[in-house]
Length: 106
Image 1: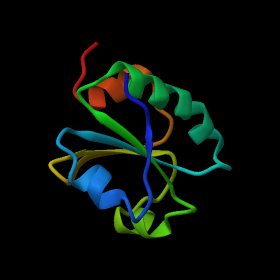
Image 2: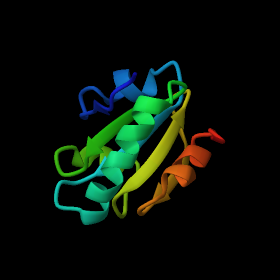
Image 3: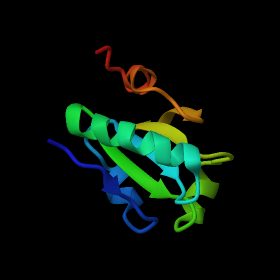
Image 4: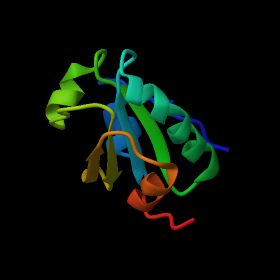
């Protein structure tokens, strides 16, 4: 069973860019209502899907990363493969939509 990894600017390279499997990154903030609603869905995916690593980045605590990846609104989900962002979707999404985004058709 996997858990969500909280990522900071300092740990980003190791946790996301150097990951050996695809990484689903949730860019969020504490005050964001849609972020709070999506958080349990992202947590559930982390527990259930072992083919992807799940990370969360608090944009208020890590503004450099939000700027680097041009996060305009939150929540934003981004999938990284081999250290490269491949898919990015802003807004609140269903579990099924996120699973499709990461390539799981369950």
